[in-house]
Length: 245
Ligand code: NDP
Image (tube, rainbow, N blue to C red; front, side):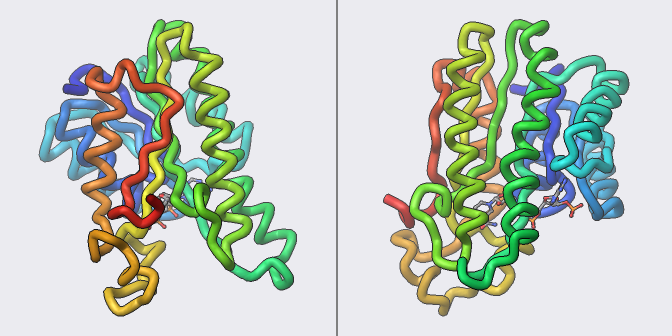
């Protein structure tokens, strides 16, 4: 389904991003995994993708929040892979705290990584998509961006911002055959949510009664990366067990 496509996945070293890399590779895509610190984990994802599925997979160290570093990395990926067809903006961090206690640095870091990071990658990939007369952009937002969440003003703002970015980019690039959509996950079992368990009242409040898995998010990302979703753009799809309905 993705054979011959080149996919860039930011934050592909762990959690949801690693599951997306594996899923795309299983569908035949070549994979560029961007990470910021976990080189070993990123290399492991790439080794697993190429050994299991015979695709090309390579890791790239890049802080997505850095405009120039993002430009350089996309340039390197283009040199190594020839092009980019799919961009998944998945890299994200949390720096939780109530507003009266939140430091400026913690606000800035989260916005810079989660929101500006996605802008940086889109900014440097879009000329490739325009030249290719097509492309797929998938931004990993969050239900926190739809509902807000106490203690996550920075994170919720970044994820709500991603939704605005998604819709504007979708409108700008629709005429160029580029789709841009967002996924809004609820509680997904990864390092980011390691403190949550079944007894947590937030988890108990999920209508489907459980947290989601990274693989379930990857299935949705694969649909949005494929030709099966060509008529969907500017959409935000929740995958949250009903949490934010
Ligand atoms: P993890 O903490 O498990 O993984 C985060 C990934 O982002 C890592 O690969 C990390 O790389 C990468 N990353 C962090 N900062 C940067 C940076 N500056 N530059 C490049 N890469 C970076 O997170 P999840 O898998 O849980 O989350 C993935 C996305 O999904 C995030 O955007 C998150 O906000 C969103 N999300 C997650 C939910 C959940 O319940 N887990 C719910 C809703 C949304 P490295 O390993 O090198 O540090």
